[in-house]
Length: 200
Image 1 (cartoon, rainbow, N blue to C red):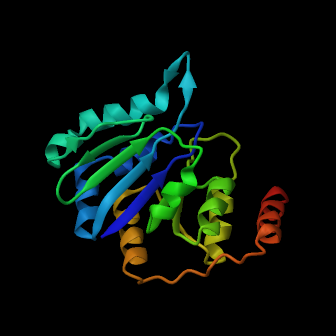
Image 2 (image 1 turned 90 degrees about the horizontal axis):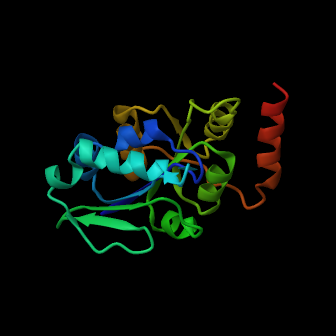
């Protein structure tokens, strides 16, 4: 059985991506494609002492009755890590971890916001990556950066739509798409991509 990690980054809540993946229908599609664990790193955006990322995550969990509709039970949580599980599926959620690499290592497929640092971290770990652009960010080059990495065939660049994400996850899990391994000497590649985008 497979593990999928969805990571939204640390400081800005990627609400639309959370809305896409936090529905019973989306999770049932994951299960149908052999996913037994979904890890969601939902962010740590703090405003006026309130963790907005946590608020969004928990409101979606409640709104879509994720726990009850999927027959999940809450396990003891620690260090802000929440776990909900059944005999066939486990949902793990956390705001942010300084050791996010540990979760990347566990994943068969990573769905990530398209920040350059996150893309490179996942590719360095030799993981299959789907980059999703947060188009609500101002003056951001995520779309161009994700497009360039996808053009080089290091990852897939996906729209933030449930059907598209499920299709891309399925393609990667079942080996229906072959990506090029990120080369060890990747520094010049990243600099080249950023330089190209800055000069367009």
